[in-house]
Amino acid sequence: MIHIENFKVTSPIHISDRPTQIDLGVNDNTVEKELKKLRKKLGKLQDTMYAHGKYAVLICIQGMDTAGKDSMIREVFKGFNTRGIIVHSFKVPTSKELAHDYLWRHYIALPQRGKFGIFNRTHYENVLVTRVHPEYILGENIPNVNTVEDINDAFWDKRFDQINAFEKHIAENGTLIFKFFLNLSKTEQKNRLLRRLDKQEKNWKFSPGDLKERKLWDKYQLYYEDAINRTSKLHAPWYTIPADNKPVARYTVAKILYDTLKTYDDIKAPELDDDIKANLAQYKEQLQSEK
Image (cartoon, rainbow, N blue to C red):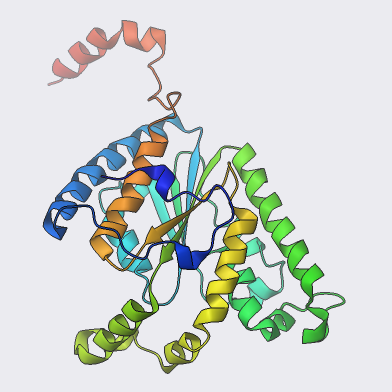
């Protein structure tokens, strides 16, 4: 149902040309059943990668408010052993984080080899939200950046170079990187915000700030497009995921992950030491003979 290459960014894109929904030719119940099968396969693969211990997997999820990031993580990765996965949701930087460079808090959150790490909002917030609101950069207390006027094109060029260098470095040291942009339509965002207001159990998710940021929709789309085009690399590709239909979006992400990871034929569970293997019967007999 899914062809990975239809979603991977391999050349410059216009976000307005990328679909926000796709028809897989089946109903949502069928999609959810297929996702359940994929979850089991991903869970088994994760167990093998944990035992193998030579690759880490970093999954970056970005999208506008209400794009479905939280539920994506919950539904796609619920079949994982908890020891092999960790989720980081990056909020407004703390005073401690602001006392370091902007990539520091992301670097220390990277998954170790054998594990999956999920960034719910990512280091790309530093070239998205801060680009829409450049005054936030002043809180980083960077040398020679004293006013918003100091945050020019050269500043952003350098920051993108730093992000590309960061991802190249971790990729060369065994981290497999997947970056997903959940491509939501403005109409569907409106519908989801209304649902947050209509349903009492979802009221807590709503913030008046969501409406303020919605007014900046076009700016966000422009800067998302620029960020994706500047940083989609062979070792760290972006995928634009149609996000208007949540079950289809979740299935698409799971399918991309599984189909890509299974191509690494060197990922295998380690074999037992020859001496241990030769004495398995003896160990079994020893256990069975216990009184």
